Length: 297
Image (cartoon, rainbow, N blue to C red; front, side, top):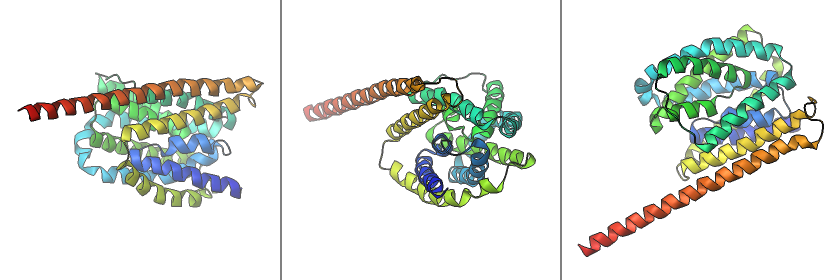
């Protein structure tokens, strides 16, 4: 148990650093790794206890932008209510291994879509927000993860950087608070879950400011992209590992899924860095041409 708790502390330190840098990512990094040795029913309540103040902190830091985003976020927040209740019922009733399989199966395409940078703006934002909120509510209450789909949705809708962080903090504080109340109603806060909290809190306290410091010295998009790659590989590993005990694939062929994700993500990484190199080269050429023009004048 001590080895598992030390591993949980290391995982949450890494995840909190990413959250401090990007404004999200704590659960989407923690959950795939921690589910390798814990169940959703034990892990989720502990993460909820941590995420409510963490999301409140993110919202407080970006409070100046709340006035410009809260109306656009309201339909999404309203949609969270039925989703959270359905998801909590699933956590309390569904077999832990099948719940893990469900978690990984939903997460993998969402992470890969975010890694691919796919964006398409939704015009009917209010009606789409209600449906999307319900889906995110189910996903969050089952997995405590909502960063990847929320990031895709908010990026698609053209939020600026500060507005993005404020909207993200607002929605995530709402979903974590609602899920906490729902878990309390269903009696999911147990002693075993509470025992994880002391191992997580120091990691969050150290990791969040560390991430905020690091992101000032790194390219945010490059950092985000590398985090998504790591996340995709971990989720694919967890999914591959579950296929055998659940007797879906009863041989090492289960790890072909992991191999496929690694190859696909490596290709997307190559395209990402190639595009960045081309953009930097074009920017350098433009700057050089501008200097030559000034000299000739």
